[in-house]
Image 1 (cartoon, one colour):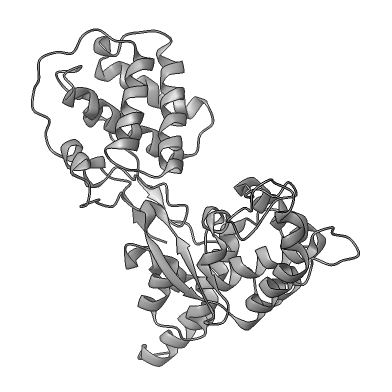
Image 2 (cartoon, helix red, strand yellow):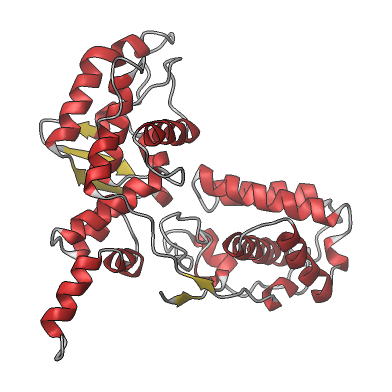
Length: 346
């Protein structure tokens, strides 16, 4: 295992919300608005007195309209700042000292947050304070003086190929009303390594079964093309032929999404989680399984089969290959092979 520093926010506003790995924030060169937050703010005329809730709303609007951040990213900032406002309890931000801000870190730990979550909240506060400094609300950004602890980089949980096969075969007509949809969900997650949010946002036009690929819309509105296996194509075709038309007929207008809920609308990420856990319990897989478990398994099994690391990075949509390299530590047989081939005393 290696240690990673969940570092400063100066490199981007998308601050390690990637569930894939705890990486430092990535830069966003397309956004001039973000460049304003990364640079040292010019001192402006102090803004009029405003409540913290109003400044939070203004900050979120800035992220949405000028930085063009994804809705999930803005929602994460909103949740973090809601906890910060709850801790403030009506106190003025201008009156905070570095000692008081350090007490907020202790408050987060008392709330039972994991170290990674505490680090993320700290990053949120730093970016928010930088925005307030940019707008002339604060003269100095004391939040920059707060440090973040080093985080362990955990090896991801991966299912064996045998357990994957059992999980994919779990949906069946005898016990599931929309079993073809459930199977299409599981097959897509494992065949493409897409995230739960990417699966929910996938439209019919994004899936090209004849060409055997699909388009995934990732973080920061980045798009990537991922090949589809024959098993995934068969599951999707079966779902489209027998179930999707019935689900699509429920709402007044035809929905554009590939996977539909019982009400004919776009499925929620929570539903994807519930579907996976339901079938995992049925085949005796650990309760800790999540959509990301299939993503981890997808990457690990590809590398175990000899896939190029750069190609796996491209299919996963990782901005840095350092994020993808964590999967090289998962497959023990691969490590043993490298050791026996290159170590002089192996």
